[in-house]
Amino acid sequence: MIPIVMSGGNGTRLWPLSRKHKPKQFLALFGDRTMFQQTLMRLNGVSELAPPTVVCSNEHRFMVAEQLNEIGVSSATIILEPVGRDTAPALTIAALQAIQEGDDPILLVLAADHIISDIEAFHLAIDTAKVEADKGHLVTFGIVPTDPNTGYGYIEASEKDVVSRVEAFVEKPDLDTAQTYVASGNYYWNSGMFMFKASTLLAELEKYSPDILAACREALNQATPDLDFIRLDQETFEACSAISIDYAVMEKTDNAIVVPLDAGWSDVGSWSSLWECEQQGENNNVTRGDVILDEVSNSYIHSECRLVSVLGLENVVVVETADAVMVASKDKTQDVKNIVQSLNQAGRPEAENHRLCYRPWGYYDSIDNGDRFQVKRISVKPGASLSLQMHHHRAEHWVVVSGTAQVICDEEVTLLTENESTYIPLGKKHRLHNPGQIPLEIIEVQSGSYLGEDDIIRFDDNYHRN
Image 1 (tube, one colour):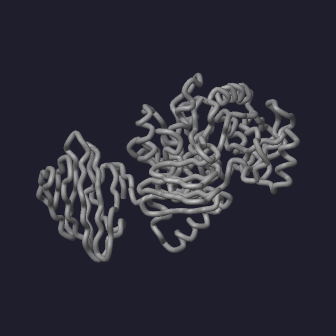
Image 2 (image 1 turned 90 degrees about the vertical axis):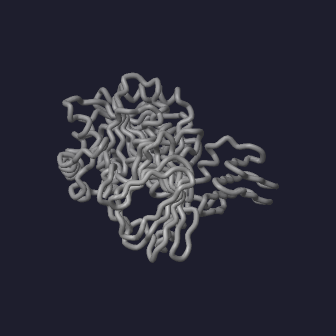
Image 3 (image 1 turned 90 degrees about the horizontal axis):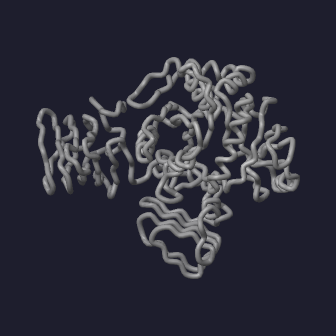
């Protein structure tokens, strides 16, 4: 059985903590491990598991690889989507990849950004689903509802409280309809988790969505290896329809089975749901970071960088990061996407990037900027190198804070240690390398007429970036 982890989401519903270039699945919202890592770790103990396949955005590939390495997963298949096309194309690619060796494995499809608190119940549901998948069924996991939630789609089952045939998939209902569903006992929340044989899914795609199957087969046939990744052909994959597996197959097939799952599941789709999932403390508050409260109740307060103090409020969400603060009524947190939309329309970088930006070689933190200057703190992993590059519009000054830096500037190679510095003139080819055993920390001061990240001409790059 191959776990298929779908990790293509952009996570805008938990802005400002979750952003396009580091969405919620790569954040440690519950404990020391990220949601992506916990998705795989909760499978420990499931029998006959093969190494996982991860389908993710090209932009997230190095985060995926690094987070897999941190939990000791070294043989995963990582498939890169050049553009987002929803779950049907992603699962089609995963199924086609799974049968390339001539086998017909069972695929356990999981989202990278869900939480499940009752691991034992989850494993029992997996065992139950495997029996049905072996019979050639398309299995979906239906979440036993705890309330008439209008934020989820629902699955109508033919019977109550048991494995049964799917009667229908229904869209997110209004409150009255949701109350009717929950009272009936044979409706479940649609979790977006599935299990089926690769051949079963491909046969149903051939029947109901042959265009998607054909486009995905061609995109995989023309895929190219890139380091540890499988890079799909962009032109072919872009031509594929953007559609969910529910619309493409599950709503049309007569071969769907629902396995009830009551295991403390949440898709953590808003700040209010994050508050519900956390252990609440005094006055039903959840706090993270440096927080002081006075007469505050039923609230979620998160501080990343600074002291956050809140007085005399209830049912609020306050989230502070290095470059943004969000304050919201808890019953309005579903609308945070409107803020992100406004940021995108205004061309604001806060919609997509954190101030701390991760790269395959390490990270940088933009600690100050103004007219014609920018200051960054740069950390380079041992043995790692930035690309050989040039800038048309800016010069750079580098000061080594700790570690050892090998600096290439045109034909000159220099070693710098703590408290030493160098100057990179505008238009000069240059490269920064860490030859040491500890992280290299430098302060970079940029000056010039334009300081955008797109003013980088790369001549050589260890990570195959353009």
